[in-house]
Amino acid sequence: MDTIYLDNAATTWPKPPEVINAMTEFLREYAANPGRGSHQMSVKAGRVVFECRNNLSKLFGIKNPNDIAFALNTTSALNQAIRGFVKPGQHVISTGIEHNSVRRPLEYLRKLIGIEITYLKTDPQGNIKLDDLEKAIQSNTSLVVCNHSSNLMGTILPVAEIGEICRKHKVCFLVDAAQSAGHLEINVEHMGIDMLAFPGHKGLFGPQGTGGLYISPDLELEPLLLGGTGSQSELVEQPTVRPDRYESGTLNAVGIAGLNEGVKFILKETVKKIHEKEWALTQQLMKEIAQVKGLKMLGPELGENKTGIVAFQIENADSSEIAFILDQSFGIAVRAGYHCTPLAHQTAGTFDNGAVRASVSYFTTEHEIEQMIAAVKEISKHYSR
Ligand code: ALA
Image (cartoon, rainbow, N blue to C red; front, side, top):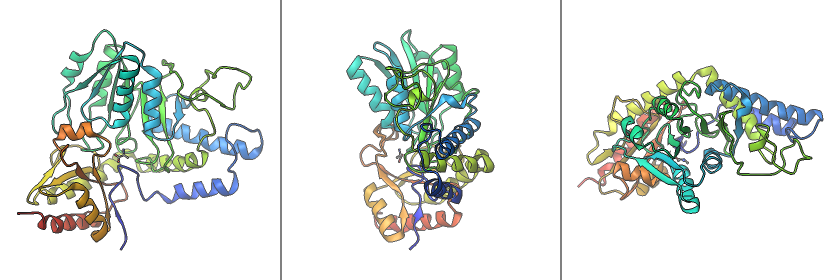
């Protein structure tokens, strides 16, 4: 049985063949240390890292590629951003649909250095009111941090409008692009984004262990990691030069070689086309499973804009059990439970039992969605009373 892979919000699969080829070529022909030696292999490894930074800059409207620091994933990028920026006594605003990768660093700082946090009220579909944001800003507010799209519901937050409010009040704006990079248009200049944390292994089609953080040239963060940067080795202190300041230790250059091809693939296909296809697939799935008795769908209604995520609960059924049956009996991979976002589950009213989440990618086919629909209909029969 071929796997029908609907867990793309966690990690996209399959990857474009170019990604795999570039990684194989890197390992076979020039897997030396980038930015460390002056020999030809090292220079070639450094070049692919440089090229990837350039392509990411094109994708996100970033002027200087050196303002991007590579990271292991969105979580490490968010930790660098939050823990490197927020100071004792400051106030941070976030929302009721954040991932633990935002919530936990914030709560850690609350305990450690006494920061204040406001989570904006969020409706059950995951929407915030911009008015509430304006009202929540205090004289000591230094940062607004939110996701661009919810990893539970696919809800899209109005980041350009939030960015405008942040600019007006001179508050720094950090966006968690875990579910939007490669899926939705992002332009840090036009959207007023000061820091952008993004994964490589999701919408950008890179391998796991890749991602990054854009840091506006106007900001100076406390680096989370200190150590070898391959530059200014004579200094006792961490260099200030970018991106080295935020990239201690050998980079995952083989992963970045793959990510580079993933980003090139997106630039070629266009984010618009990718989003349109993913949205159409969610609509196909939502339209059909909405008719299943006892099924509760989370997030935006049919016809509304969203990313490629469809989460649901079936009455009388445990979400993990549904995911297990989908996998074992139908060969369909989804993710169930709390998706590292208890906040969003509280907002959606599914904190009791979690939810089943199906997430599509550009490579998902209509036929695969038809099979998912048939499976959900079949499984639900066993739970209807
Ligand atoms: N944060 C990822 C997800 O939503 C892993 O599944």
